[in-house]
Image (cartoon, rainbow, N blue to C red; front, side, top):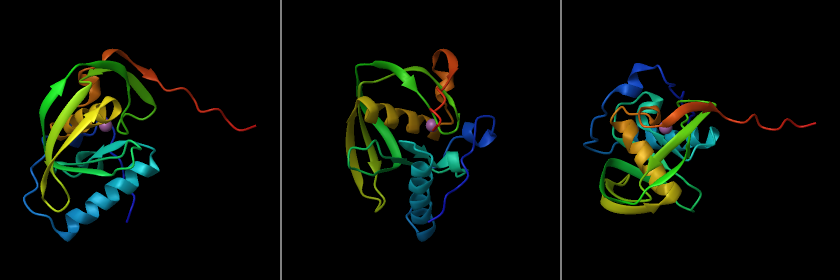
Length: 159
Ligand code: NI
């Protein structure tokens, strides 16, 4: 496993459309492992492949519900309601903004064995699914935010 460099806003690769994954291979399995490791290292709850410079439709999510979700070629097939809350992105470090997302989504995707499954998410999971799927289309939350980007609070320093 290896931690990969996270691309940040201004990097053109974040604005490109990702290609569907056609088959699973050792290299892609390694990429998925690295994406989880990179996400955990950065204390993120989701990461999309373009954020580590790979234009493939792969997302990893862990919102601390006891599951590690891998979404390959994901497609949101249902959504309901809305929630307006602060949102951040590992590609926009130190910032957040207010973004409205569906309160519920259902997404259809392939898992890491290329088996189709559906995942339903509410609240933070719904938000993460929408945010990460947007990355695969080259979209960032700054495209849909309400108001301005805000600075995150500094973490309290230890005395
Ligand atoms: Ni992001």
